[in-house]
Length: 367
Image (tube, rainbow, N blue to C red; front, side, top):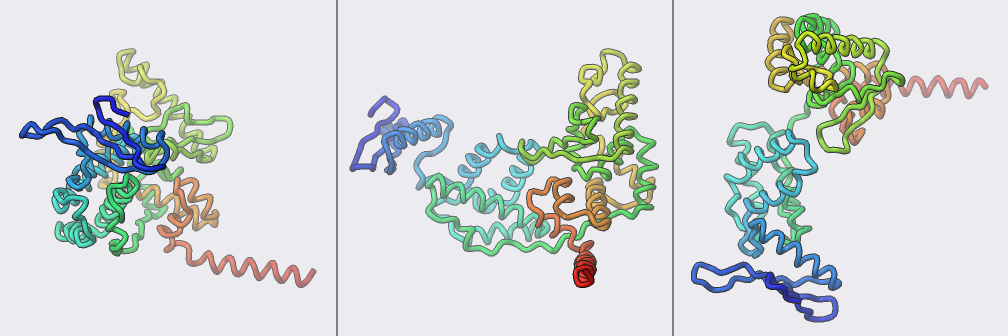
């Protein structure tokens, strides 16, 4: 098969040689990328199409010349459609700041475990936390794992390296008194309902700002949290009547705001938006962050907005709510994530379980 872009030639049964034309070099000589693949003719034709598409996107098809920087670009491009914008930005930042300066120019064929150690050391020398080092390591490992799938590498060098070990994270949980002070101050700002909802649902900041009225089930007392990690991370969170009353008052307030601002206001064009600022525009993370700084200052409570999520989880666990239920409310894919983060509030639960078991055993003996 030849089409001016390249050609496919069968070597033996189930083995094919692909040749892709790459233009001419600086001396005017033709350049080609040659690759051997195994499988059916359809498999080989699919690989030809992929290689031509990669070539047209500017990817160097000669693996012996492919650098980590080019792999990183290609990997980020492949992952971006499945990531929330904020997650994609954080991935790109970690690659740009901690990976490319150290191993960006290294060719894949020359990449060794020692290079990965250099990336780990570089994060530490820049004064960043072990958590940042671990996140960076995970990105590099995922990137090189994909390179193995793409048959650009035979082994992932990260598999020979011990991942960074961050210190155990112990979230700061505001006390009930501190929460009340935060709520009181927040109620004097346009973000009072956002703050209360964060503590009542355990939703992340980005998830709250993506909420729309269509996500509220008024009959079943539920909110569908849209999620920010991936398109599949949406979850349903049950809420109580007081929280529903809070949302009802918010909807009334938003309607009154639209009437006061007039038809030209931003919120007048998007009646689905639950949280808007004083001029009717959807609340953005930057505006909420600035207001939150004033809230914690005036309340005299040194916590992050994200600590409201930790408060929600902590008080649920302390009330004896099963870990699986709490994990589902938080959107944790694995229950182990919840237990790892909140292990410090769960020691007594083992004792309570033992006592409950003893009571059941006693009843069985008496029966």
